[in-house]
Image (cartoon, rainbow, N blue to C red):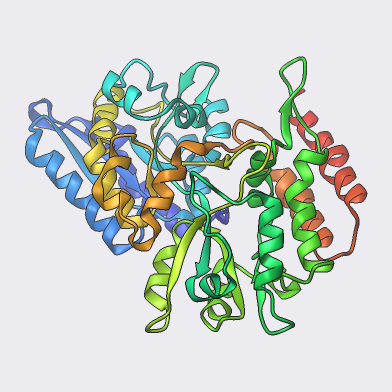
Length: 431
């Protein structure tokens, strides 16, 4: 998850350029030309280049509506936007992710895009993706890039073990996964899997969908509540077994980020890594010469291959004077062929059904096909739309999960902290 720290210098840079979008008469130039400001969070060179090229293409083909590209950063986007909203200087169009939209929508800062979205875009992006940006029947963003979690595996070790290689059509079950990790473990020299749990909350919540859990539910009155029953805790208990009982996963991995596990993976110390889809780029760039690797779907449980995601989004500020034109630009940017360019630039998946059929995203190379095959199983993260989630995550869930995975507390105490203590936080936001 992104750090949400306030950086005054970055905010000043945003505010200085935001006037053209929402702040005053400069938003309309002489002759009736409209100038829109687009705050992009693209950061990889290929992605930045693709975004800038699409902005240039729009400007070359639209005489009356021009778009100005502004570079932002994931590190401080929440605080940048919040302050610019409150100051009346927000960009017309901004890039973010679905987890940020709940509070902004409740604050009245986001435009409802429903009246302006073309039918072609509404039908090309699946209903499950639209649910990540829809609150009370209003659409506050266009979900356009998404990232599942996958297994990145050492091909040589898989071949030597003789285990069945799973596909999205015939995945492993979680029980099979545990047994296969035992086969792939070799004394203290090699582990079947390394769980990087430096930030344990989002993956613990999102993967609970595969075991038919959710953790975040609605009660009879439609209020958010946290439960932590058997289905909700199945993945956490599995990780705990692998680390503390079976010794098929190293305890050292619990304090690692995904990047931290890669050197051990390349050295043959870990046979498989559960990582976000975009980590394929680091593997491709950093793997030693001759190192063979492949991308596998995560195992399936009672909930199938389902897992939660919070897609990247494009939204329009409520204060924008040109909501229709801003939405038209978003629709242009998220056309299927353009989503392909943006997805490849970030090593992510597009939400567009048509884009997912593109040959460059269905090739077996670098695991693109695996991602495309599991895209239909992606669901809105259970945390979306939950006010108070950020506080619960920071104050309760992160330390509780870390203590549990390290063996400091048992499942009953984890349940008490997550659910009993957590619901007190949620209740405060729902008074």
